Image (cartoon, rainbow, N blue to C red; front, side, top):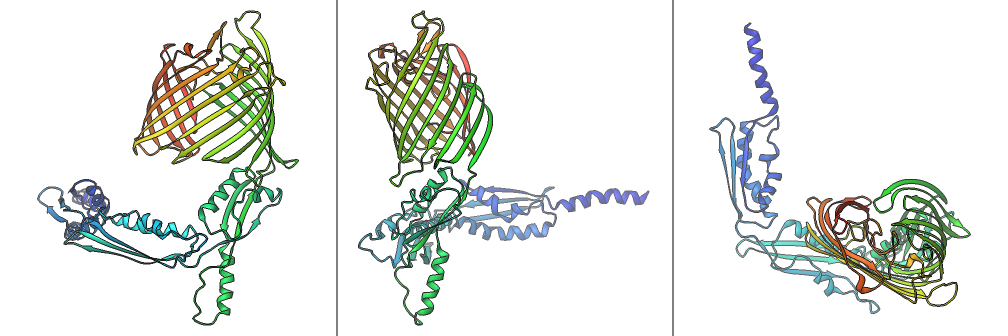
Amino acid sequence: MRLACVVVLAAPLALHAAEGLQYNVRINAPGDLDDLLEENLDLLKYRGNPRTDIEQLRRMVRTAPAQANTLLATEGYYSPTVNVRLDESGTSPQVTVDVTPGDPVLVGAVEIVLNGFASNPESPFDKEALKASWPLAEGQVFRQADWEGAKRAILRAVVQTRYPRAQMTESVATVDPDTKRALLRVALDSGPEMRFGAIRIEGLKRYPEEIILNLNKIKPGDLYSEAELQAFQSKLQDTGYFSYVEVTADLNTLIGERQEAQAEQSAGAPQPATLPPVPLLVHVVENKRKNASVGIGFSTNTGGRASVAYDDLAVWGLRLKSALTVEQKKQSARGDFYFPTTADGYNDSFGAALERNDIEGEVTRTASVYAKRAWGTPLLERSISAEYLNESRTIAGATSETSSTHAMSLPITYAVTWRKLDNLVFPTRGYVLNATAGGALLPILTDEKFIRVTARGITYRPIDPKNLLIFRGEIGALRSGSKEGVPATYLFRAGGDNSVRGYAYQELGVQEGDATVGGRYLATASAEYQYWFRPTWGAAVFYDAGNAADSLSEIHPKSGYGVGARYKSPVGPINVDVAFGHATRKARLHFSLGFTF
């Protein structure tokens, strides 16, 4: 009986020992300094450790002030007052850390020494611009993380342009506790200048070299630029011909040539001011020539969707993309052929399509062929296209004269898009503008001549990292002698996920019979506020308004407003909105994926 009692009493003691000494820590520090100390002090790191006992706790209390001083110095506080108290009178020891940080040390004079950087008369290196880019300015709080980041940034600015062998030879921060100033000195040695040599391609088997060569804007003799390498690599990745692309300067060849040259030089020979041209190495892994895929999906605009796609990367030297798509409100079959990008940067294509739409009582059947030339960059895109359309349409509830019509047209359209965004996938600052102008101006394969112009834009205005305002607008106008003979494709309607939320897809327009058809004019606008409570999760409130009509005086904007959820997924932003249409007195769900523009 006595033995059993010993076992029962010993079990809680053993469990307590296994858990380690239990104690509480309270940190009193202003701003974010309490988080810094909580995350790094040994008092917090080893709380609950099985090996922590009262003696080890006392030791950590004694060393805590010195450890806190070191941590606070990383945030610019070099003369703090730190008091640490241990109270062992209660059931659990209590540790209190009181911190008075004092005034922070500020950045004083900054000296940047640049050795080398030989001036080339053809393209001199701008030393003053490099010094001006130094991010840790005089008067800022001297934080260790900012100091290290500034050194990385200035070295990075050098090695990614013309001097990839540059090194930081000196970096000193001298802190004066009396004046509370940090005097900074940084010295860089440029090393030899590097230029690109001839291009070498690896991994290309199925497709012609012109696919790569025509996209290469780097010429032998050009100064080394990491930005040019990345831009070239991005262009190759966008072609669709390759599953993997790597564009680099072949430094291995350079190192071998340099070692041979050094072996031939006498001892103590000076380092050359420039290196031999570095080969431009392009390594690719080709995509399969032929690819077929099937998919299913759902759109709150056009309903359920099933699709079959077939791609062939080498049809008469062209790239074929074809697809058959069946949705509840739209069905289409199309094939597009793309020429390789020309040496002048032009992207030419042509194709054909069959499409049937059944939207708001209007049924259209369209056959079309087109040819298009596009050029430019993601910041400024331009295109010109010619398209022949042959369209028939049926309008529910219309008079016998207008219930079924036919139209054909040969319009030519010029389009331009300007982008200035901080991020092309997840934009938070900047704008995008798009404008088109064109029409069917000649009586060739055209029932009714017309002129059509559109403009739309979106702007992102951040308030702070968590709060964002988005404004969007679109206008359009069509001028013709009569609407009859103008394909419905070129008329305007509004409503849907990326238009006026709270209304069905293309629900807003001109009433004709029992159907809604397109009008000559369009005007929509939207204002949205987003709050990002986590890096990838946000909430939104919005207000949309707009309509389409046959005259400007007949445009009576319909409004919609609501709330939404936002998620930054790996494939782009996902938006889910619940919007209330003021005119219809109904709520609708809207879903969209990606940044649409």
